[in-house]
Amino acid sequence: MSVSKKMQVNGQMSRYFYYEFNFNGKRYRGSTGKETEVEAKAFERKRKEEIQMLEKSAVSDKAAERSLLNFREKVTDQVKGTSLLLDGAWELFRKEAPSLMRQQPGEKMWKAKERYWLDFHEFLKDKSDAKTLRDVKASHAREYVGHLKQYGKYKKDVTYEGKSYKNTLTFLSASTINTYMIHIKQVFDVLKDKAGLINNPFDDIPRMTVKDKPREVFSTEELLKMLDFTYENKGKLPLSSDHKLDQEILEAVFVIGFNTGMRRSDISRLKWEHVDFQKKAISKVMEKTQFSVFVPMTNGLYVFLKNKYDNKNSLCEYVTPSLATMYRENPFGISYRFKKMLRHLGIESLKAHEGRSRKTSVKDIHSLRHTFCYLHGVQGTPIVTLQSMVGHMDKRMTEAYMMHQTEELKRNAIDRYSITSLLPEKNESLGKIRIQDNIEPDQSQSRGGFKF
Image (tube, rainbow, N blue to C red; front, side, top):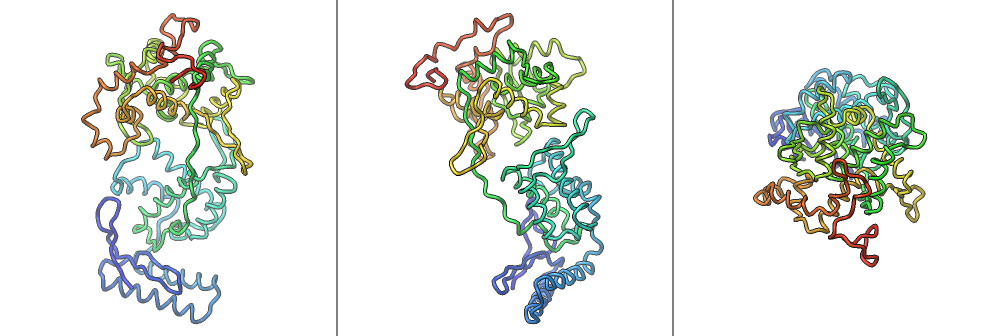
């Protein structure tokens, strides 16, 4: 038997002692709710005696669990009192969590965390009589995770521009399911002391195995098809009810994504305060990683953004307001339009795999980011410079290569970016667009018909 305090994510030792021991091949662990080692060991002895008693009396598994839970509840009530209501859990978590986090989430991430928690909360309302955090059992957590795996998110209602509809998506990837579990578990971890929790109901649920998500880069031919569609065809998707909205979204996603390598979230929420026309660069904190990036603009991107700026509403803070709105209310609508454009242009975005009935997506909005990295890589852009533009580096890599990350290096990299002339200059027609001379046709070593 042993009791000890734990190191928390903020670098401080936990207030209470934790116990951990094995009995009949099963591991038992959790908080004792005691601040002194003597009291903690006494708690652990009681816990072990209760388990031994249950084993000796050969009580059924369900009865044993009920008895053990009653024991834990009794002890917990004596130590910590009444638990927190589920209805107020999120607000308290939002208040308490920042002090325990090494890195503060952006507002977009906070909203995502809230969505994950509220989905679980809705599930509990319909599937159980749980009213407090301590009422939530491991069986509830297991049933919810099972629902995610079989049916997707629990709450299917989606509201966009004042209209409500049902989300029909029933498949969630392994990484998405893991994300749900991680963020919901975090709420219990942060509030465990205030809620009087002995165990986190998500503690013993294993995460799903995540395979690397395959992504392919776009060929030059495919890039030119998308360029032609967004400029010449004005983004008119088949059977669409709003071609103007399609045009605004697809044009911004393609032009900004291709020329910066930014993720969907950063493209959608790009603000004018991030754009510096004098320096001819974009500077912003990445939504997902909170990593600061500096990306010099290609001439085509500069012209595209300058035209939008000259014609913008003076009150608009976002580069593409309609895109920002859709990302906030219905991000799947952006991906849906991009995928629909690929199908319309005959660009294969799905790939079949032997032994699997479901095809996987290999080309989507994120492929623009892969394409940006690929084309810079084959043209000799230093990996350090490239990583600093797309925000891939972790803290250690950033510190190791900080001396090499200069604006000049990045500008030189942009100057060598092979397909900068893909986007037309002002008043330039598509007929004048050409691939730069350092990319020549070579069928033996080509991607899309051009040698890289």
